[in-house]
Length: 581
Ligand SMILES: Nc1ncnc2c1ncn2[C@@H]1O[C@H](COP(=O)(O)OP(=O)(O)OP(=O)(O)O)[C@@H](O)[C@H]1O
Picture 1 (tube, helix red, strand yellow):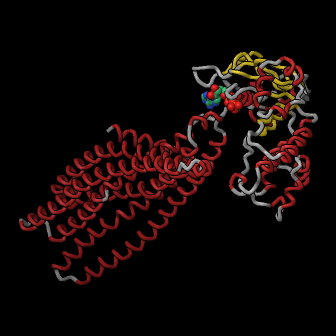
Picture 2: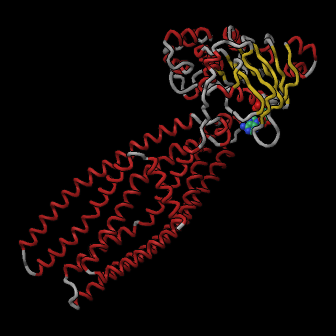
């Protein structure tokens, strides 16, 4: 019963989500199911007339019944096809809308969602789970509507024909339905588990494909294959459990169906012999009961598919229920058009990811407009965390962050991100052309603007050296470009965005000295008339910074210019010597 209630609740959530489409879908699916269900019932009446006519040797009556039946088949076929198309069309459109909604939703999720869950989990929800939900609407609900329409129709017909047999059938059907709902409960647990295991398999597959280089280098093929095998085995175990339940359910529903079918025939023969019903009615009963028995034989597969579809739907809706990044009101920009003296300021900022150790403690600094500020420090010191706060990825921190003199909370995310051009460590390159990749910086930019951004980033020459120039397809994650080329495309995006603040998380990967020089040059140009905040891993790149902050264990351990910090012989000095030696 609990499963039934849960299933009904899940269905009602889905139907509500279909909005206006649900009515056309419901009409389509019911029309299709009822017209298909009506054929065997019409056939039952045709059999009564035909067999009675056959006994009376009335050929006209047989011809009449045959013509009527043929016309019915024609009408039902046309009507059912139209209804089926209507329902199918609504589902396809709805799934398309859901897919776009899910994509949009994923792009608005806070970064913390992706730190908590594996990419594979999202991929699985967007593909496998959405597909199972589509199947549920296209096939399983259709079969269910047919089964219900046919059961009601045939039971009513049987009541009209011979109520005593009909009562017995209703009782047996009710008992069988109760038994099936009990199975549904246990099957649902297995199908929920199966959907999660499938998601885990997608996660493992993504790890295999994305980490293939590392796997090969460390000859870890066996390790990764073993991990995949583990999930594969778990899936097989769950499928076996489902298979056992299906087999048991199949056996019992087979017994019930056959028992019902032959029971009706035997009872009917007995009633014909005793003169209670004619032979036509007996044949009609056999016809109705035959279809009912067939439907019952399909029921186990149907229950598994419905539970699987619902489990997928729950994961789809689970994704849509994940909380989006809060956009806030956004009233900061009008005030901030007047440029404040300090561009980025932190006042007593404290932040923790979890209840355990704080990632940032009492951070205070002020970066003046047009300054070049660098953050350095040992691994795990809190540099990336600070950048995440400045970019608005996490909002739950204590203290105050001011951008252009206005507290961060007064900016909408759109406004905040318009103020900042971010160059991440991993210069993410999207599938597509170099031109499209640079244009990410400003989707409305003209060709000239894209090219002048590429020139400023000293990328124009290498782009033109490719036979297809800006139209060169870069491959998955820019696989056809070198590390330095990817970084220069990423810098070109920042030039194109033309934001007053540039935040750069310096790439850790080593580059050849030529690439490093070009990148250094382009960053120097980029920093002109802009406020630069750089997380530096190579201390040589920030020697000319206006101010350097050294972060250790979430605190600012020291700050000053390169000369001051070197003379101070503190942590900066030690770090520098460590890296040089
Ligand atoms: N998503 C997260 N959830 C929980 N803890 C995190 C998360 N991200 C970082 N941390 C922790 O916060 C602390 C600061 O990490 P952070 O990434 O800011 O350091 P970092 O200075 O940028 O290090 P690195 O130079 O190695 O990149 C570390 O102890 C880290 O383990």
